[in-house]
Image (tube, rainbow, N blue to C red; front, top):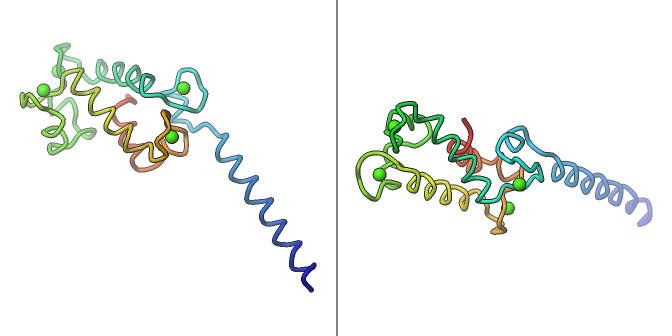
Length: 134
Ligand SMILES: [Ca+2]
Ligand SMILES: [Ca+2]
Ligand SMILES: [Ca+2]
Ligand SMILES: [Ca+2]
């Protein structure tokens, strides 16, 4: 009796570990865009690099700052206020980077130095993507 019970449980456990492994190894489409070395781990430096490109793309007027209308849909009014210590109503590159760092840390609950695909695809990961993906 005990023996017949044991087999399906072991089978299920094996199946589960296979599924977890597959999800772990899979590189998400979003990760492919923001992670140039494709190691399925986004470092803060890689996020800054992708963010700097996005900053330029969002800034067609070519000044040094992103104004509220340029940030539209990515940074709310309240978030802009928080991320704007000099209170000029816009984000310069250093303010933008500080916001990337904040969202990076929020999206990295395991506290290692990188964001993996599964973390990037969470709600908080998507908030980070809004700043580093065009
Ligand atoms: Ca990487
Ligand atoms: Ca601008
Ligand atoms: Ca500012
Ligand atoms: Ca992580």
